[in-house]
Image (cartoon, rainbow, N blue to C red; front, top):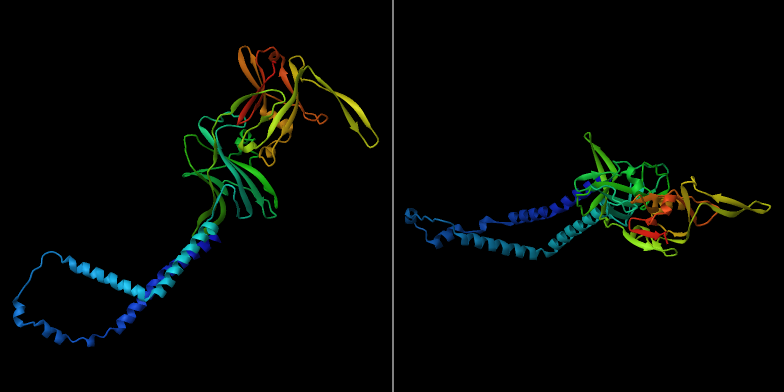
Amino acid sequence: SLTQRSSLAYRDFFIILSLPQYYFLIMSIIRGIGFDVRKFNFTKDLEELEIKSEDDEEFEFVLGTDTYKYQRKLRRIIRELKYYVLENKLVFTVIISTFLSFVFIFFILNFNFLNKVYRVGSTGTVGNLKYKLISAYETKYDYNGQIVSENKKYVILDMIITNNVNSPQTLTNISMYLKAGNNSVYNEPSLRNYFVDFGRTYITDEIQGNTTNRYLLVFELENKTNYKKYYLNILKSIDTKDGITKYNYSKFKIKPEKMISAPVSIERKVNEVMYLGENIFKNSNITFKNIEINSSYQYKYQSCNKKDCRDYYDVIAPSNSASNSLLVLNYKLELSKDIGLKEAIINDKHFFDKFLKIEYNYNNKKMIRSVNAKITSNLENMVFVEIPKTALSSDLLNLIISTRNNTYYIDLTT
């Protein structure tokens, strides 16, 4: 396992670190053996010093320390060490080169293989799954630009996960979590409806064998916290020793892009392009080619079989014609390739249900209503929305496209 390889690497490191000690020990033994005390004539030294018996009666007291002796000894040690190193330059060069090479290799292995830390945009294989972290965001707004909770903020991770084996795999709170400071934060699938514009949130899906899927991971944090970086921990191995279980994790270092600004209000007219926003939407946009308000909408369509084609007529009307009218919209929706929104919405109806709203005054109070869009397969690029008849007499009647970046208003009273 990676843990065993790491232990072996540490063992080799300390073995090489101890090698110079053996060299100095051997050199000291050789020099010790070569030292011959019989070559010294101490009798002659005593005669030269002229030591007499009367000197035994003399005493000298020295207070303090003769520091110059220690300084002289230190300089001598440094000088001899310098000569020793120069005499054995080749040996020291080999030892130092070996040591530095080992340290270099150790760090390369540690940071790129054994304990590699991945980053946003990189891909890493951990166990049976391969992970690619596409992007990371921090926000407190939902897909319509409304604050989800005053005291909370959210880290959103957009990931591509590939199952490299035949058997299904499941992510759990043990196998994956976000480290925020000293706190462990877990994916919150219950928040998925607030972030559909980012993509499809991982719930408890089984990731089928040999498939690639794109998921969101949503983490909820206290709004008062201010972490500059986070770590996504992914379980790579489990070790058990002496009854103690240790979980080993690979890490993605995350510095999320902060999306903390409220949406910008913009006025538009029919046939004017409305870009959904930057970042997650890329160049996605919508344009309303024509807008009408009717009591109903009759249309002709053609149905064909193997023999011939026939014309048919159909009518789309409000569910309650007495209280509602029909807003008829001819539109052009262009969603950029590879955006997360395509993973979350099923069709154009789902898009309008999420992002289209009607604004009007009722009893001196501003009302903003979501819609239940109607789309038929017999008509291309047509969507139908019911609006209250009371809104038609209001001095305020707007069609709204509301995203987390922009809020577009089209005045329907003109």
